[in-house]
Length: 158
Ligand SMILES: Cc1cc2nc3c(=O)[nH]c(=O)nc-3n(C[C@H](O)[C@H](O)[C@H](O)COP(=O)(O)O)c2cc1C
Image 1: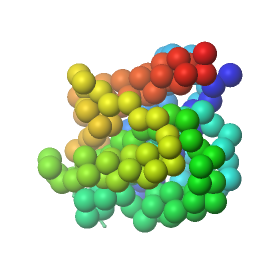
Image 2: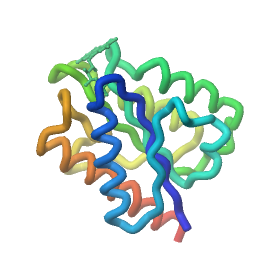
Image 3: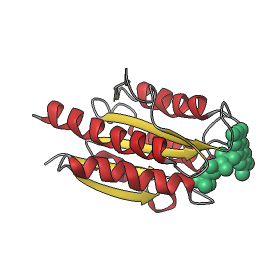
Image 4: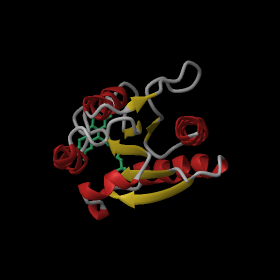
């Protein structure tokens, strides 16, 4: 059975709330999922999952150093994450504060791993974003992201 890990870093709780909503979306599609704080994730375990969804607050327009460290540690498995589904989400304080650049930086690493990324023509195009704590719009986008990832994983893993 397909399994998705949702990984987040969160200092003040906003990205964590987003992660919980992404999990809700994955569960709606009846796909197995695990939610983890990045401090409890070892790069070795990334191999176990069919999809990785990673969320970070925006720090100076990019991901937090904790998320970057996990991605850098994943070099150990370079080539072995190929074909897994990837997705990202981000929280910032300001509109145009860098959420999309943060997401794209995470997706960039995933693409280098050979992972499969699906954009969204209707919802948040690159991945779900929130300004501060997720409001009603961001809540919908996080759940939507989770459901879309889960549906893609089901399609790919047959
Ligand atoms: C070191 C640092 C850098 C930040 N840089 C930005 C930034 O570039 N743009 C922005 O809009 N918010 C920035 N923020 C605000 C956080 O992205 C925002 O408060 C976010 O919602 C925090 O998420 P969290 O509650 O999951 O920790 C920064 C915060 C910190 C601590």
